[in-house]
Image 1: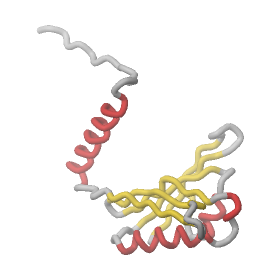
Image 2: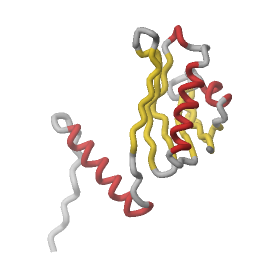
Image 3: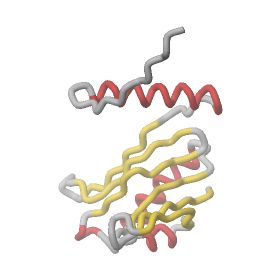
Image 4: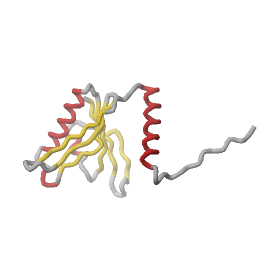
Length: 143
């Protein structure tokens, strides 16, 4: 019996996007087999000024019973105006409308963890010294 050769590890450069797509589809297929179709839906909300310029927004994914907020940003001059709260409330409204039970996200200590806590999120984890001298915080809110 011939000895089975171990797979080799390759850093993808030219076909990185295609390979990443294959990895994603493989993981999704595995997950579907275990807990059912996630029914992914992208959520992108923007805040625009009177001239139509983007001054903030968020991106996320709705799937299974959650909304994952991937990115959230408010332009410097638009902060502390209630805009961030309004964006998060709109995202929450859409999550509820979609039957979601949780919202989760992560932030850093130099960003706005207090902002999320005021909105009802609670910390469920932390990686200290990432980046050096700061922490990454994982937050969740039950709807």
